[in-house]
Length: 437
Image 1 (spheres, helix red, strand yellow):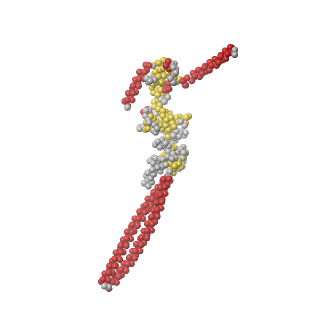
Image 2 (cartoon, one colour):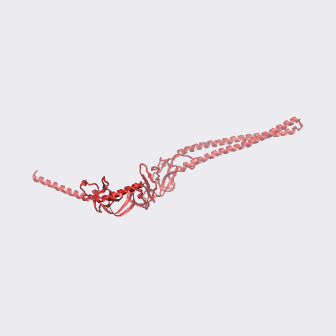
Image 3 (tube, helix red, strand yellow):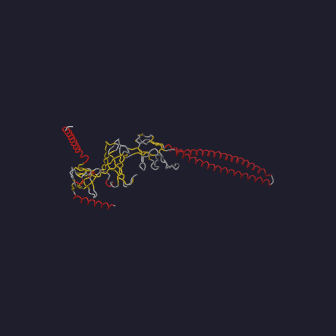
């Protein structure tokens, strides 16, 4: 290969490399502010509390299972859902919603009905036995009346007989009358006893009939229907699990599902005990829905729980906050996951930067790295989920490194006079914290 040809090839390679580097630098320059760098902004700054939650209807109709506790005849320790329509099903009034397990109640009803059959048979035996007893007593009384009449005739006929015969006739007559009186008393007593036996047996039967009726009514009530038209939403138990087929329902609450009023929706969120003091009723909220990424909604805080709670799988205490969405949207559904940005305060005409631009060393002093090679001490103000206010240290438009640059040790340090302000604030914050706790 000739020297001229080699020089020519080398020149071409150099030219291509130069062009590639020029294009790369141009691309890098365009992307500096969006990737490696960020620019300090000026204007309105919203201080927010960011939290996730779930949608639910502000008003809803509870679909309940039958009330068992009121009846003294019906007892159950467990109400289990045997079948249930899928969540989100549109129903009309009277449509099937769910059925509860009937096995226990059907078995008990069968036992009651068998006992009822036995008691009816016992009543029939009592009536038959009573009829025989009373007929026998009536026959005995009739016969004894004949005996009394015959004894009376003998007394009258004995007046011409010896005194001994007369006395014997009178004794027989008196005995016949006493026997008749005894039979009549036995009849009255037997009649009274019979009435008591029959009445007691009928009471047993009436109680069993009442119990059987309650079980029949209950078994019918275990098939649950919609009280009004709407969309079925599953209820959650105390552990946050949805109640569905196979679940047990609370014997005190008895709610199986709900029919939400979709015209007014709430976002139920939980705010940490650290941030709940910032949240006040009436504050505006910006809401987005995970399932509806192209839509956003506004709302306001309407209630804040007075007592904190510890949620399942969490050790920290949180406070329940309800947010009412403005207006209505038919695409909103209960249980949709929400992201809620509660606006707790608004600052005007402040300088702010992304939080990622702020770096803190072992001394706890916040600094930023500017594009013009300055390590700048800054005084931080309020912050939200993305940005932080810079009270002192940089001006709007300053271009900052997002991450600590590779040769940060070569940067010139500026703003050391702000360190005293930062430390004084830190001491004040520690004093206030100690006073509160």
